[in-house]
Image (cartoon, rainbow, N blue to C red; front, side, top):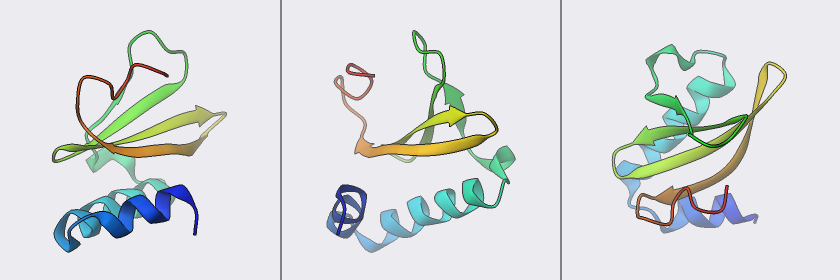
Length: 80
């Protein structure tokens, strides 16, 4: 089990379902309904807001790579 799977297992079922739904939309190239924004100070990193959690992704060519899923706090974007 990788780091992302462990993070998802720790979440409550409702939050986990919302995050999984957002990831499915992203995987199916339907990001238009997601709350997605470019992270300031980075060239190719974006965040998807899902309630109090953030999905951090990196755009490579026309695809997105998942970096992490984290609860929003003051350290969320610090080490990107």
